[in-house]
Length: 304
Image 1: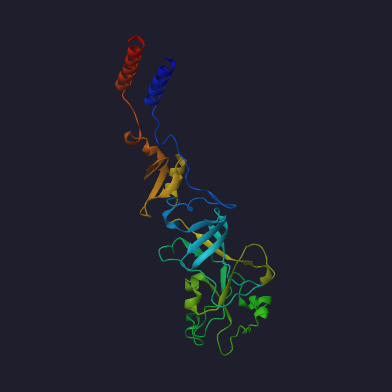
Image 2 (image 1 turned 90 degrees about the horizontal axis):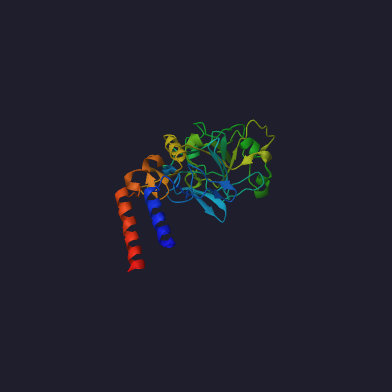
């Protein structure tokens, strides 16, 4: 008898106190890779994060990789306060090591991603061994070259690095002489794309400024690609979603933003899913009828 009445009590309690999908929210989006925290707008699982950042980050053996059209880069840091990423290209030249043969990735994003990502204004790309026919030098010597220092960093200082001596490269003076320079430093905004193949360059180095730190020379520069990211349209949707216990994501079309509330998704926030469509409820009359049916069965069994 006790077992029957316990089952009846649980049935009545669960029916009269239904759980909605808004009551239980499970964050199914992994939030880390190695020692790097993965937070909105980024994600490494399908359907999580902002749609403009989809299919961008991948966690491989606890290394976070950033994948765009020009290749894959290791993510060294995500700075959410300043909305920036620091990337490393294994085939990028530094002050101590020069990588030639067009192996480097450079930096180029798909056209639809361009509004979301751009190297920061203090990031310099030093293009090495570019052909005289390179688009960089079109109109040379009559027209000015795009080569210039960026945030106090440029080829004049980079020529001092030991990597130049190690590979036996000539170092054309800044006056260029009769041909284009062996190294051309540019800001990303000046050419919009760092594609070694199209620019006909053998290699590149990239460095960024950590102002207001004063750096004495190229051996102390921060080598890597510093990328500024931007959430188009702001993050108001995600803020509203998270405020109600949801997880920010997007639909199968890869465009529409969704708020994931347990097993149900919402196009606004989790407070909106507590409707009749997501609530399992039973009228009091049906609960009472069920109780008396169970009671009648029990009486029949015990007094039959």
